[in-house]
Image: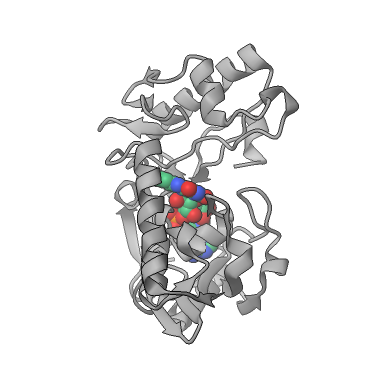
Length: 306
Ligand SMILES: Cc1cc2nc3c(=O)[nH]c(=O)nc-3n(C[C@H](O)[C@H](O)[C@H](O)COP(=O)(O)OP(=O)(O)OC[C@H]3O[C@@H](n4cnc5c(N)ncnc54)[C@H](O)[C@@H]3O)c2cc1C
């Protein structure tokens, strides 16, 4: 690994590429700006038996304090573009969903409004099957180009194995591009919907804090009696609970906030304590929604879901 391909850096700090701002550096880091560059990087990594990880907007990501071995990529340039083509929107996997939603509104296209409140990229949203206020990614996603060690493959939503906050994308597979098939609408009415959705979100969630959004998935357990993970955490006394520099938010108990000096270890300890309290009080096992990069110490029964 003495000779690195052009653009590959060593020891790149990842905390600032995440919204919770914790974790250590990537052993190797690159920002591929075109499909060809991404394909060459992933082929090189495979030939050197180097593991590949990908960071989008880092809005659902916990990076190990010890750092991340192998190559971490963040899409750039062409792979962040958004282009309108009739009623379609073609995006790089690194395009931000709120920007896609705004572009669609400008162009008088409806269907992707829910993206306005998801502070992630197209690639991150596909990996996570992101959703908000009933909008469904699979309903508007036409295809994605997925790059792996062997090159690029186009997949339809049916081939992406979508479930609640998950997909069948393999480790090291990168969503490089995607196409959304939308419907014509009046630009004014789509913009109005975006405004309403933003206002609804501002009322329900804390803003301006360092967080990765929902920590745990809403449980599919009859004992929850329809309560969300946030409601269960709140009723188990977790609102405001603090470990080191991290606490459950006072406004939304399923959000963890970094007060400035939190580590990933603080966040994980807090998650363990929150889930322990919910288990003790309601007998319900919460599953993390947040994804991890690098050797983050999670309880064994969480590793399958995270
Ligand atoms: C304030 C706040 C509100 C949120 N609200 C919502 C919400 O309403 N609904 C919702 O579903 N989520 C929500 N989230 C969570 C988050 O925004 C989504 O999960 C989003 O889809 C993550 O995208 P990302 O680009 O930030 O991915 P990251 O956090 O960077 O990564 C998440 C996972 O996706 C993988 N990944 C990232 N990019 C790619 C790519 N190009 N190809 C393949 N894999 C990739 C990463 O390796 C990782 O496994 C919220 C987060 C915050 C901070």
